[in-house]
Image 1: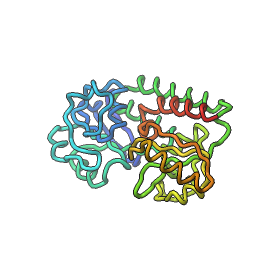
Image 2 (image 1 turned 90 degrees about the vertical axis):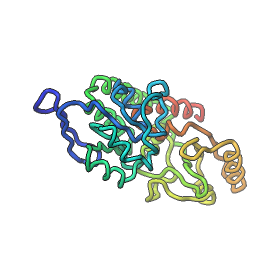
Image 3 (image 1 turned 120 degrees about the vertical axis):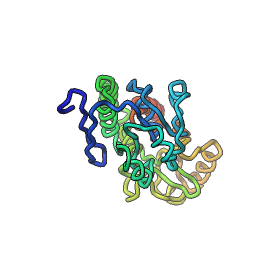
Image 4 (image 1 turned 120 degrees about the horizontal axis):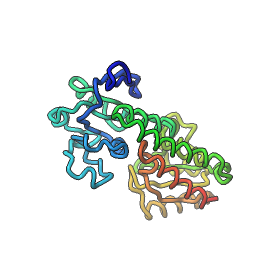
Length: 275
């Protein structure tokens, strides 16, 4: 806060300075995890537009106008809602849509690539929405959970892990991503961590060559199922790799912000079961 008691001066993750004379009263969110975080912070009544993929929590979002997808938002529709701010993400939203919107409205862009940065995103949104107490309560819970995890004996034994995110072509979680950092916090060592791309294209041959102890198959963005699990298991087993292969909730790996605490608890439970 600066100057006028309600004036907000804040930088987004692209290091762009935003000045608001009062907390934004009309918000459009173009990111499902940010939408959920806005609700967590008690500001859902200020949401005037969300994407087709903003579905949680269902009851809070049922009557809010939809403005298209994360990759194809309806810019004229968004502008017609007269938002005070649009909340976006560098990875999930297209640069051209952000640029088109910010000609007429402030666009606050997030880009967390670690768990710590995810908590910073929550605090930033708390500042922006005048919900700093709610943000502090949540982030302190997450930090306490992280301290507890760091002292867990099970987590101290690294498991070589591959987390796949797509098929045809096969793609995996790579370095400098929120998902990779989240897994690292739970003792899952990313076998694709040495690749340059954040989401490298790979193959099952390369996967087997990297000899993971664990292969994670989340249900988003690609919806891996039991058939995929059996296919991967047969392929790597034939090449002498006896990895543990798990289907899991993808939203806990990729939804930063409000989902971070649940993700830490969910992955810790999985990690303890794996030993």
